[in-house]
Amino acid sequence: MDVRKKFRQQVSMRLMIMVIVMAIISLVSVTGLFAETGQAAAEPAAAADPGVQQFGLIAAALAFGLGAIGAGIAISHVGAAAMGAIGEKPEIAGQALIFIALAEGLVVFGFITALMILGKI
Image (cartoon, rainbow, N blue to C red; front, side, top):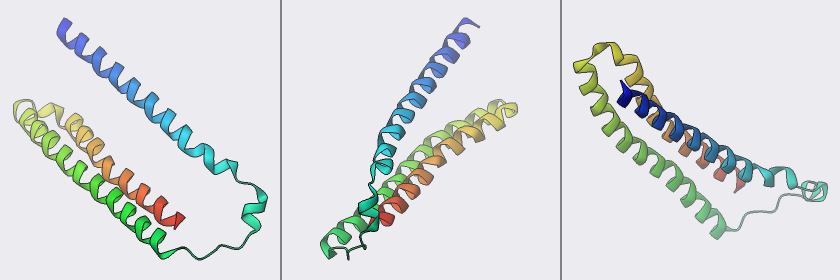
């Protein structure tokens, strides 16, 4: 029992640290959105340089591609472990599906990042 309690405390501590780090990163990345002046918005949008557009498309492809590859690797490991655990204890199937869905969230983050990059070019 003591080992389970210690494990739960470690998992909850790591989850809390991860949420704090994600909140800090999101706050830092969003501050530039609200710093625009009215003068920049009044100017007409200039045509993008083809070189800049090329690198923007490459960045969007990398964001989505690496997110999908990372999610595939995560799901392969988590899914295999989840299926083994369900084979031994069928009542934890719901928890196993939650962990698989968390790994699948990586694709969503990569897709959103790619859309944000494409919106800037």
